Image (cartoon, rainbow, N blue to C red):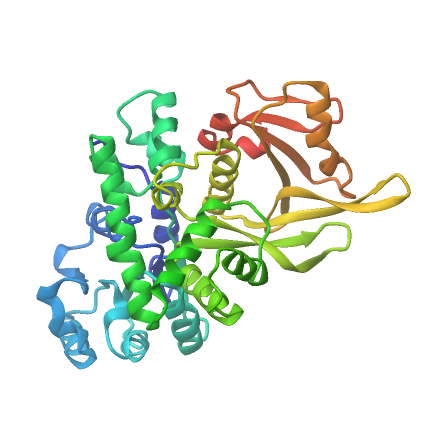
Length: 413
């Protein structure tokens, strides 16, 4: 297998080197957090003059390292390896497994020649523990499964073959090492059940596993659809499951979000410049995991494409919302949707996802929400067709999906 290029994340870590903060690499299990730090970042350090004995690495989810889950043992071990005043780089994989890890990391902050990097597989440990405990002394780098450009960089085949593989089996790095459809399918199904679901159940003491399973399947079958706990509750009731509460559904959704399996996109009123509290949309962090939950049956290109565009925008560092704009329709007013409103510092883009623009009528339909936006930020329609980018008569950029995904400057064409 070719080496997977993850330069976006590697450069983020390099830019944070020796910044006096704990670097916290987060993301879904098996998305490549450990590989990013070792060998990729470790090799960078070695190639730039750092001695190997000044890089301290511990995989805390390995049985042979169980003794280091005791915070006192871990603390003593790390300190015992510091022999001089040169910088030591400490990499601790799956730090949340260590009891009272917050106090250990806080202690490391007081050692001036220690530069610390940790990984964790759930946002709960990040948001409720580290951020509170560190008060701004933790610096998060969020890792996603492979983007299509990263996937294609290591894929043995042409662009179309890579795309068909990606929209079916997703971007977890190990997928690239399996040869057959059966192996890929089995890997994703086992990973979902034996790692993700079991982690959630164990960490949160989930009692209603059958409800959690059903909820995952409902969300998987309705990616890109507006929903909320009340709507999901009604779905359970209509399916004959009446002994479930809205509070349980809300808690289970939060567990799925905390494990990075799903992300929530809020709705934003573009004209009113305010968020709409409910409903909202959920997207899966990896489309292959979503597909395996449905036994690869529901392969609707529209929703899968929308999910992949959403993940790509997150990969590029944007805050992504679902847009809403009010228009006049005859004597009445109605709200229509903009697929994505993307913000990054002082930049903003409005993006529509469409399978194709087969006619002027279809083009006008996709343009309509964008043309009712009362500002001059760039407006884009991404289509599945492999086309050369062009501008509509109204100045909206139309770009093919593969060019959008493979050209890192595609939003600025």
